[in-house]
Length: 134
Image 1 (cartoon, rainbow, N blue to C red):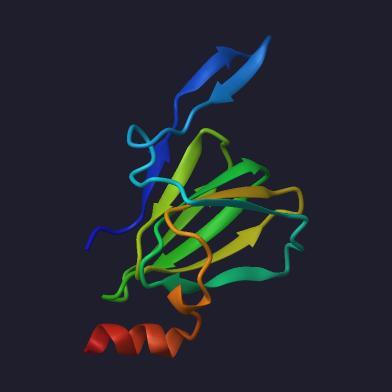
Image 2 (image 1 turned 180 degrees about the vertical axis):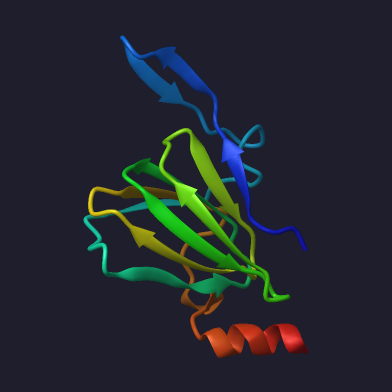
């Protein structure tokens, strides 16, 4: 199984006029986007995420502020990603446990491969581990 990895989006422009970054399928996004959402004004003391997905793939982007993403693979391998540049995203495949902690000013954009489905979420960490021990 492929683990999470960083994606660098094209960064077009200059500091005197500003920048634009582009995320297209299949050039940068490895799936067709079916849902987009964003989180903001999350208190720094709150740890969000704390789940994995059975089928959904996601790309997370800190379009403002800083987001610390911790991922855990089925084999127990843990990685820490610091997202703080709006032209860098983090690909998270299915069956990867992930948590996010935000700076107060952080705005996180999420591009997902599937529409929301509560049944796709694995919200209990022990259940996540149990699934992989089968």
